[in-house]
Image (tube, rainbow, N blue to C red):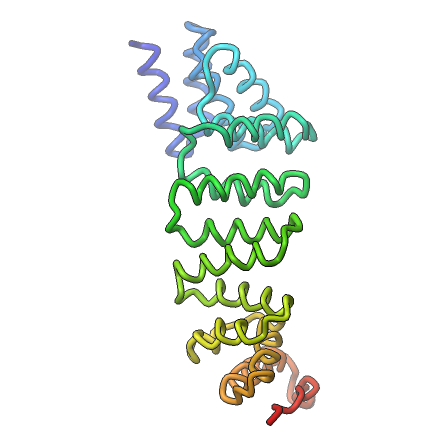
Length: 266
């Protein structure tokens, strides 16, 4: 009972951001019960928060000899293996983690984002997105993540487009999903569908786009569709983004505008 109270006290301190005080509590607990596996796992999580990667690995590996690690503990162990160059071990633990049924929903986006930063782990990032979709098929972000990693892993574009269409159907007001789908459709030569997808972006939403390359792609789509109004909105926004402010260019430098785009075809 006293051991459990000490462990709970360490957990409470950790949640308050009092890492060193929490570690002191765990040291006291291990003096009484050196085989307290939960305390070893908590120690590893705290050490990870302090970026003590190797120490965290030692604590979590010790915990695995005493108890089954929680999903969070397994995630931190795998992450620290990867951070310290133990790629094969990291991949093995991440694979086991993604097979767990008790992995919290909140951990799946963190997993896919983290794994997606490492080229050798992108297939596992895709697995995390797929697991998230199976858990909650109405979550558009998970479908977008699937499409993103499928595209990076070289899946056929028609398959990626199908996934992006699902994301758009779940959140039709999200312009980012529509931009991603229209960009892919344009690459596939499906210009009519690309136009239909971005035509649904409102004028006010078009004016909120701050990505120059996105605006240039939209201009090309609207130009091909002879949509002068939306073309002009995107062109004016692009000129605004590319033109320095008066304070940036000083009083004696003329306003520098980009080369005029192609004329709308009639």
